[in-house]
Length: 119
Image 1 (cartoon, rainbow, N blue to C red):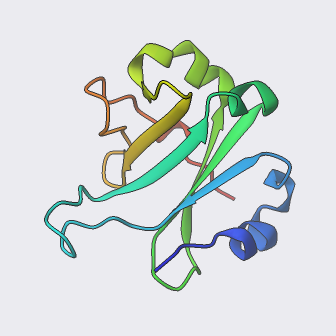
Image 2 (image 1 turned 90 degrees about the horizontal axis):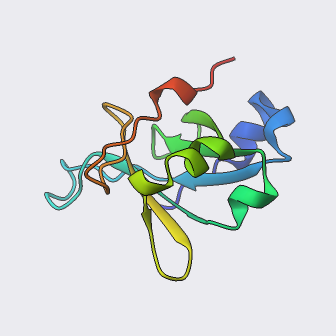
Image 3 (image 1 turned 30 degrees about the vertical axis):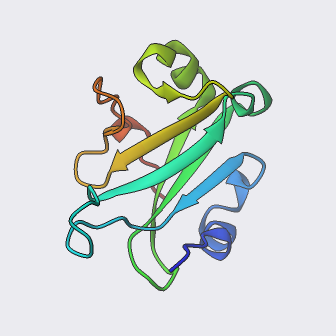
């Protein structure tokens, strides 16, 4: 099922709508042994120049009613660019663990826990 955080963010965090918002469904190991209990986010490196913050919305259910929200400053990516995976075409791919809030895609395991956004 595809995750859609639009209504959730619009109702709970409308002031975040001017930022780059990325949504991921849950990739659970209990559903598929190849999954890593994570959310998968993909953004362009050029987004870091366009937006002050990147908003991650990680689904916590399959009904699009509950999400973990992260408000990550673009500077954090730029300051840690050597600790994230970037393709030759400038795509950043993150596998964000929903247990530890670290990037599982890169061996540096960059943490995003400090950017969890609450009401």
